[in-house]
Length: 431
Image (cartoon, rainbow, N blue to C red; front, side, top):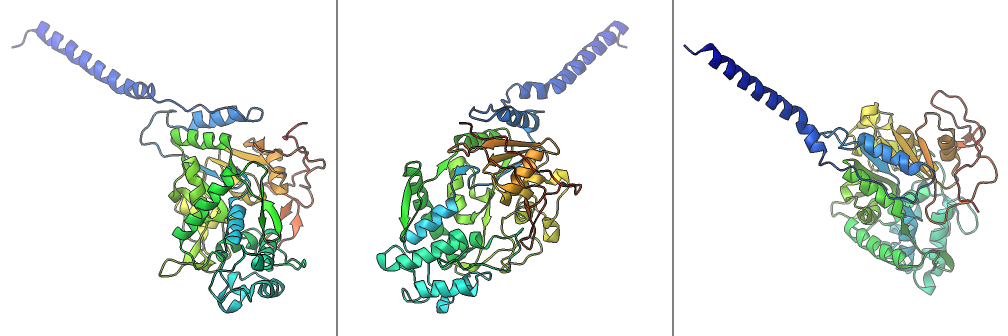
């Protein structure tokens, strides 16, 4: 029989081992957390925006608490004029025109390039471009002979009107598609996505090499000729990724184009959601677009634009299928952070559950909602390069700040349907 003193000693040892084991289990996360470094953001932000963004990273990052298997919080950025200064879609369009990469449509019928193109625009394009190339062949828009065609294409794309002032598009849902934006990928029909990525790489090289403020000649006109990454946004994206966020880009520029540019901030192609063409069996882009939610491929009615951005984010990021993708999802299936600069970004910004960053470009509905800040989750920053000065008149939030599906203007309303009062521009470049 074992002496009682021996039993007591064994019990004491067992208790000590158990206590030690318990201590090890309890302190293991703390020990791991000691090796988990939360990224610190660089400066260059307006007011307390850097601090607010840092608080987001501190609160949602993997170090608080340290859990290697923690579900990644989602952050979504618009691209043009949010992550970069100027528009990569515009840069691509100008490159295509200068290098003669837009094809004559089949049978010379320009309505085949967009279901929303007006008869007046189709006639103007046929008159300017019809004699320059056979159907399906690239148009010589980079030559003197093709200058008039280049001018007409640039007018329809950039102003949504012909050179003579006739409306170029009609009949679209103003909350789910912008026909001029959609027209750029549609004009890329006949090329493969790989070829378009090559075009985008060439345009990117040119626009980054050009000095700030540079212009270029397209047709007989002069257009913007440069693009720059915003250092602050590049740092923010990198910081979010290091902290364990799942970072996505949602853009109303063509998918292959944004894929190329997004690599510059460390976002992979599979985390880019741009306007997506349907393709032929041989991989060539068609003039039709992929659908989202209840919208089928080829319907050409739902791109990454206002409410369409919600649908595409819900579908591609959170795996929501069918008509449900067009609806607001429960908080657990939404992005915690979003960043944008335009009314085209309003819906996906409103869906963000923790913080919403707005780059101020004086866009009515967006600035109405950001300045109203009804839930305390909006922050506003001036543009990081060539910021705008203060808007001299209030934003017309109570009257015409909102554009409805049919294009009619009305008041901006909060979630409870109350009207947002007119707002004064408060975040701008002084002097």
